[in-house]
Length: 184
Image (cartoon, rainbow, N blue to C red; front, side, top):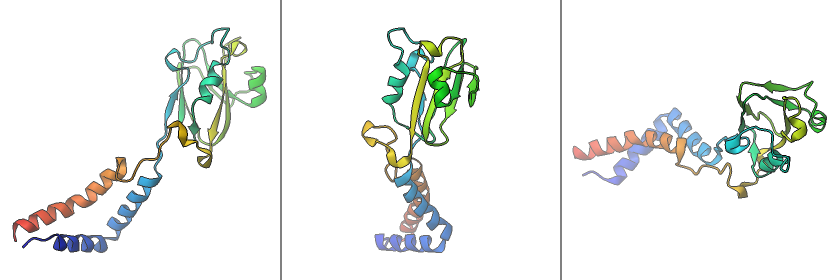
């Protein structure tokens, strides 16, 4: 007669007989608790990276302050007949575009945060930075992350990639127990 105990024993033997399976299983559970998704943010929302209205020159810094950025996240600048530059803090304050650490003028620029810290962006088009087309973004170290804003929530175990791995690990066991039970 087919019993749960015999299938449970089969599972234990399968897990013990394959070190690779055990390691993958442990990693899947660990990753399930630790996985945090990277996000992409569209700078300026639907309007994109444009010169702000004269009565709202701090619009990009306000937008940045309402988001939480982490290492691995990226921001996307969408613009026409303009450019985006990453500069140092002093160049940001003075709207100095002569020494950028990053420059793009392709109209659809992605910038990925590779480390924590404060990043400073300005428009490279003449006069745009002075009109408020600039932004400072603070990228948090993982321990500084404020989860109360709902960004970057950790994935629960058995969800996403971990859930797929666990399902694939247990599928042969379920099929074997089903086949074993049909012969008893």
